Length: 116
Length: 110
Image 1 (cartoon, chains in turn orange, brown):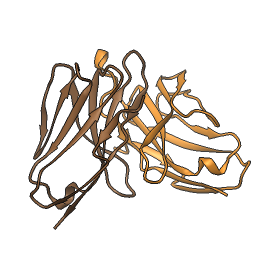
Image 2: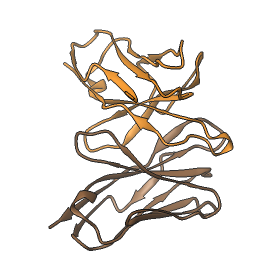
Image 3: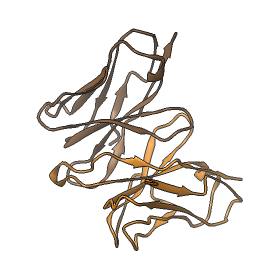
């Protein structure tokens, strides 16, 4: 069981370049989300999705796009990379638990992005 | 909106106890706790639901007071393996936004 798979694990970009971070899960989870974590900081929510075709903005969505065409995949696109987007990015997924909301979040291993 | 955790950092000797607090300005439906070791992804510890439920995981337990919008994580007889950063996580009531607290760095010394 692969769980949540993120690619690439490492990436270096130049300012202005675009790229896509891939995230796939094989647990049939409805809920998927992207977080960024800066050094010594907590996790900040970028975008999230509660099912195929449904996405919404989190706390820090500017400069990022997402789409959810299938239950399994939730790619994160950087439109025009900036040094401020240098960070570690985590994708996570969970089952919804009715009125109690999100269940346990399963995380990918992270993608370390450096923008020069 | 981000839940605030206290303390920000704590250093313990093996065998000592610690309490980590998580406080939110928004109504909480449930609270999760995660531990993240350096260079790794966060790992789920436990979930607490409305009702003041206290749950345990080996020597780690937690409580949740929804009226005070607070949760506390209790680590007893700490072990070296407990070192890491602890995060509380919660879904903002009425939304599907799942956010994390500010984090508490815990270091256990031999």
